[in-house]
Image (cartoon, rainbow, N blue to C red; front, side):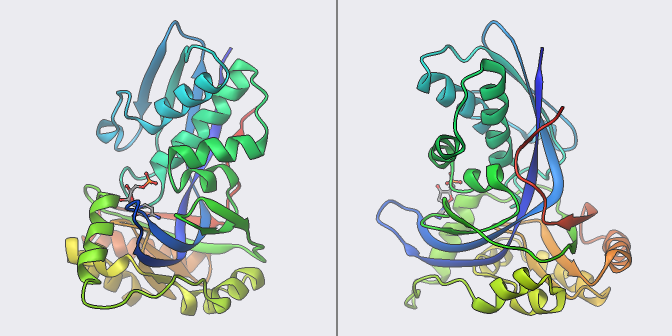
Length: 298
Ligand code: C5P
């Protein structure tokens, strides 16, 4: 018997970053939107904790105890006094180290899959607490849809979304380290006072109304200058998508994936074709949002 859980990637449609906190994290007003690129995490009985991974980028995924999905299995098992006896297989489709919370998605998927396999009957509130212990973005991977994340991003308020948004994601060669991007944010901010992070009212209204033009005007990512500073070539990717008719372009989270919001599905196909032809990214993916959170497959 095995169980499989599907987990979505995310894009940050509004990522307001405050000053560094004493614990090294940054207070955020982080507006998450789950998008239709997915990993699948399968849990099957095994004599000990085993981890395998397949799909594009699988070779960059660590298969040792540091893997967030393995840590999730150990955390849940420990909570219930069980041994973490499970074979986890991650079928990867979310870009690795791409700023789309792929590792966080795998952790949320592993929690839900192990909970079902072991019959531990964990409540959603308890699962969200475990997710927050694993990483700032993990609770949102469990929840999906759209949400405002406060604190370091783990304190979630679900947000209404009034329609379907069409996105293109330009996947870069290689990843960017999230801590390195935050360190670059701090370096770039050292001569100014960073204000407390706030979510923009216009952004929340655009999501609620399903208004792509209004969402395009409100997209904002405070980590973008840091990601561009570490990877200047991303400016060419953003420009190529804008020139091809995207309503707006921004770096996804800490990057290096670039996100393009388009008016409809045909514009998304056109932008993806132009991005691929431009040679400024490894591949371009077309999808829609919002997507549901971690879901057990039948
Ligand atoms: O929580 P998570 O393990 O995903 O965070 C990875 C790194 O990203 C942290 O160690 C920290 O350097 C940075 N981070 C941050 N502020 C946040 C979230 C993450 O500085 N709110």
